Image 1: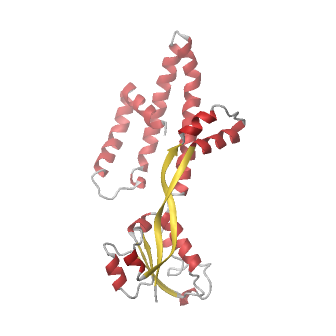
Image 2: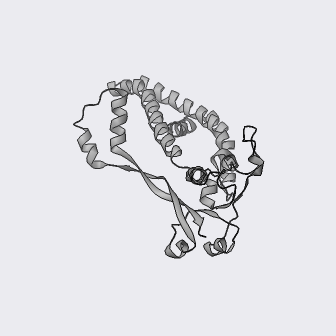
Image 3: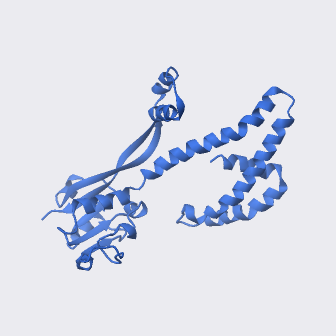
Length: 252
């Protein structure tokens, strides 16, 4: 995370860095016109920006070491540890965010728990767009081929269908009598509940919230070691979750 501001320093301070970054910046600009964007499309730019960040850090430390005042000299010893701490903090927060940001995968796992295949050998599951984008992938479609080598010997008798057809309204889904289960991203209303039973829901990451009241209290709390710092961070910074997906079962 700290590589981005450091890379900007490197781009401004060294013309050689600009010649490295320019093709990658042009590549990102072209991909920005695509309607479907994914991080994996541009992950190749990371090494180039890390080079620019290293150049920027060298220029900052060189400048601070040449400074005549004490503040500048102190900065030369604190700038690198500070950026490392920032990276560790953002890595921790983004890792937690990622762990709680795949409701589609969680919904599919929950569906399989609610309807074990030995009791429900046949099902037709329609998954909404949000579910498909957040983990409800082929790897979790355990009750339909292709089956991995470690599958049960009777796996070929399963007849589950996982459907990701887009642009279907609730009326369209209800009209298709072959569909037995839904994973939807819109909270079921009373009309929907006439034909479908809500059997589960999945909560997922919405945002981070700062508890300003605890910030003031935390100034009076003695923090001891890394565990104490982590506990203090968990008290002050709260993850807010919301219901993202609902699992529906067609009523008989």
